[in-house]
Image 1: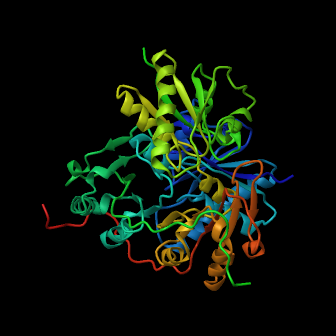
Image 2: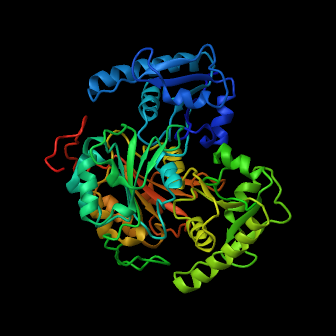
Image 3: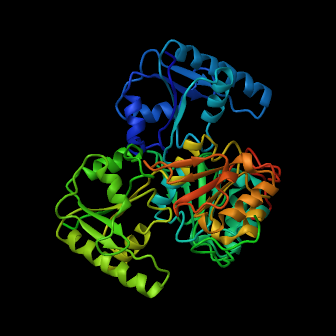
Length: 254
Length: 254
């Protein structure tokens, strides 16, 4: 009997923010795997799991997913990781892959699962969804991610000021991820648009090292952590049109 | 001693998708409150809590949040709900307010919390984040909500086809909520843009009544459930620009 592969989302960092399902899979006899960026590197996902008080099983395995945009190099590592997982599955073990945040949201699990399926399409893969860093950020900052009929955009801030500025016409809430490289520019934009009081900076949301800064102008010139985001909510520049309600409107198309 | 108010996110419907923190608060001696749309109405959030096997505490209270856009009427109900909560808090009880999905995302909890704080600013409010329906949808449909450097937009579909079409230039992933009123039009748009195979329809994601339809063209003409969404991922119409990486770029502004 081949085992199943589970992508186990562990939430943003606080072990109490993992789901009951994730907790139950951690306590099962499944084989643990988790991502590291390099050989003998640390794994944030593993750290979250261990913060529950559980001990890492002796035969667990780190899988290497390097920080690179070289697709050929990545594919080689995905293949190696998938082969490691398949070997365990074929020995009859269920395999869990630990994921920080949510396994569908900016996670390597998608690539691992796809490569495993490409090697053996009979493998059953299940993704256990989890709490994302931006949901945790909204809760901790006491800001709505979305109110009635609101629109929400989540983008890496690196696409630049022009795009951010343009999205402020269409979205009530903007989540800007990885703000570090252009933090000062973002602060100036929000100042010019009179949006500073609608904004909040959150570093490592939902983790023990969490930092929340409501007065984001105070961060001007500071070198912040890579895992930081800015949330803009109740954006008054959003041009809200009419919304279609109720039953489907009649159309003449077939 | 005044109690604390907790917004307890219970996730999309499967009781195993609530967090360990939510589960622990449900089992505490806190006073339960939950939203209903009308007097003696059913509460989806309560149903999720009871699916764990817990029994509803005898002295729990339904709070009425009617389905209306009449702001004056809503404010009256929010005030009444907040007064009910504050009475319990002042008796020294902690109060939990049960929320389906995530308490920061299209939830009445934000309004309840704000009104409670307006009546008594000393009340401590804590929001426990949860798994959203769209995170559950991505996991169940086995589609990425976001891959590396992806952009994501979440909008009520009712803003119309023109907005949806325009967002396809900027976003890798689109989540269209409440698609019922314009489902046929959306299907036709996605057909015209050659995006049907990148799309998935999900009704009541993560609940026991969940329905996932990958062949969304087959839904043409069907009257679907109100709690349904369409997810479009890996959108090939997205015009992706350069992304700013690494350290902050030098600016001449102070």
